[in-house]
Amino acid sequence: MLQWFRGILQTRYVGLLEGEVTRLRAENRALMNSLLGTEGFPPVEFPEAPKPQPLPQLRKRPWHQLQAWRETGAARSTEVTTSPGPPSPQTNAVIPAEALKPLYDFTIDCKACQAKLAAAQDHLTDERKKTTSLTHERDDALRIARGGTAWRRIARAAKAAH
Image (cartoon, rainbow, N blue to C red; front, side, top):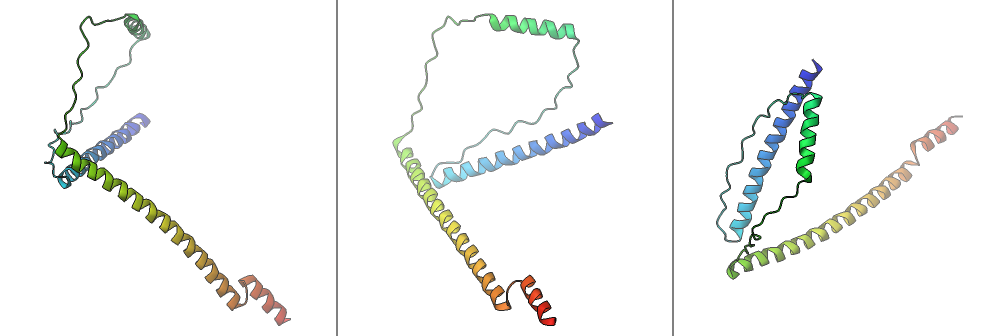
């Protein structure tokens, strides 16, 4: 019963994760095409995302099969394989000069935006500190105007009553 319940939860969790991955892929495609569009490039067509395939149920193997599998894996890892052919040549990507200017401008704009963001965050931190300080000052002033803390006023009222 516990295994069945665990299997149901894991299946639901995996389904939720797959849905999140699909949503994030679509969001990434949209963002990339938006950025490319702002720089004057045509949108990129992405291949369809692979459909999730159900995993086959693995059966438990007897110990002698596992041992034989480990021995053959160890024997394969000790073999040295060499390829007699020449190494494959590396290809270099060629980016036209007219495409580099918008990309360079975008990186400069991005750095400027990051600097503005850092300045705005510093300003926000300062404003939060000021707000906290003013709140404490206001609370202190209200406490003094009322005649001290609640305990202090109760004690004073008790003394006056005697």
